[in-house]
Amino acid sequence: MAKQDLILLALDPAPILDLMDRALRAAGYEVARASDRSGLDKSVQEAIPALLIVGEKFSDSDGLSVSKDMLERFPTLPIILYTNKDSSDLAKAALKTGMSGYLYPPLKIDDIVDEVQKSLARGRRLGDWLRREVRRTTSSLAEKAQISEAERNKLEAIIANIQDGVMVIDQNQNILFVNHAIREIFKLEGKEITGRSLVDVIPNEDLKALLVRSMEETLKHHEINFDDGRVFNAQYTFISKIGAAVTMQDITHFKELDRIKSDFIHTISHDLRSPLTSILGYTELIERTGPLNENQTEFIQRLQGSIQHITTLVNDLLDLGRLEAGFDTSREIVNLESILKYSLDMFDTQIKNKKLQIIKAITPDAQSIRANPTRIRQMMDNLIGNAIKYTPIEGVVRVSISMQEDQIIFKIEDNGPGILPNEQSHIFEKFYRATNVPEGVQGSGLGLAIVKSIVDSHQGRVWVESSQGKGSSFIVILPTQE
Ligand code: ADP
Image 1 (cartoon, rainbow, N blue to C red):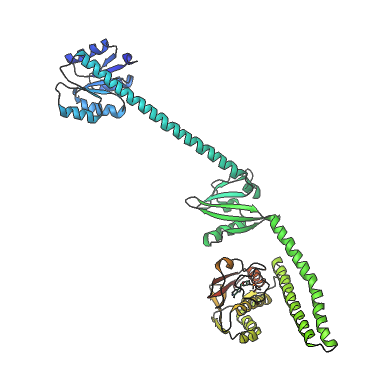
Image 2: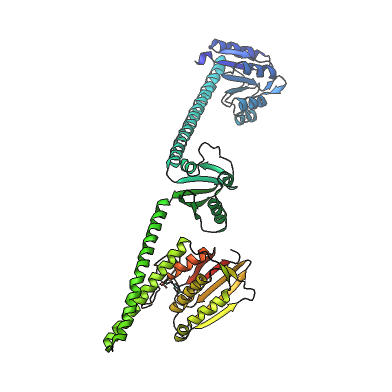
């Protein structure tokens, strides 16, 4: 209640001080006096007044600076300045400081009480507004904090419970977070791992390779194999300002299906080979049993062509099966240049028929490599065969062998139809034939899959660079020391 408000008077002794004291007490206010700065400080420490009346001159300081200090400490405290002589400059200065009232003689009791009441009311309004604002902002902050806390819990629950493994690492590859699935996959139950180096906590070679490769290449996924047969596909995602996330999906089941499918194809191809050989044998025998008319000869030739085609397909499938199974480990010192020569010799008739220009460029420092010569020949045959097959008459095919540090680079470039950008990533898949294949150009879509398997089994890399209508370059990089 206003009547119990404490009014602090900071005025030098004078009749007006006593008048104010009496008038305010009479109006029901509690009144206290301060005789100097230190007394004023003591008083406000004991009880914060509801209002302060300060003299223009107060002890050895002045009313304006006292008000400034007080308002810094108590911004809502109403302060009235008392001056012996009215001056508009002083009134302006008082307003600027943030004081709420201004008194000067001649003063009647009512003037004093009125001014005090007005200032108190203004101070109260300011205090109420401030309290409301504080309540409003803090409640909205609390609300926000609550939402984000709830959201965070939800997110944590989702990440913790999803089947895929999720781990987040910082820019130095220290662990920031791993979910439950990661702990299970790497058998980390109970271990305190946050903040530790990922490669120390999980010394898995495949994971290490993913981290190294992700920093250098655009390829951000890698298979992670475990001794117990589990296989995971790990995906690396860069996160700006944090580091990276690695997610892992269990693909053991798909790998097993793939293996069963390959076994099936292998068995079928194997079983088809013998009947195909005998069909081919009998077609040849027919020719020897007696003279055939023109039609019969043509049909037999077509039959033989088709059987040859199926036999090539079956042989390719068997080769792929063998390569994928990793049986192909025999190694010899192999000179790429001489293999290239044999391969080009084999295609000589086709090169001449299509009037192709073959340009060879082999750097003198080209080293020999440790490899399987039959497979390297097969790789070259497929790449050269394709270049010849897809390049139009009178086209140009460039073949080069060069060195780059301890790697040998085999490149074959043609000015054929080129391959559409969105198809380039598929052409190394089994049975994939791109839309650029001209009508009547035969093929099984297995040649490049075989090339890729051979290059992979020699720890090399193969890729295509091509622009539609201009030609294609196939580049193979093989390490000289496997
Ligand atoms: P195919 O038996 O069809 O030649 P490959 O696996 O050898 O199978 O090649 C896959 C596909 O890649 C081809 O069908 C063709 O579309 C494309 N291709 C391969 N080599 C070339 C090339 N030199 N120029 C243009 N396209 C090519």
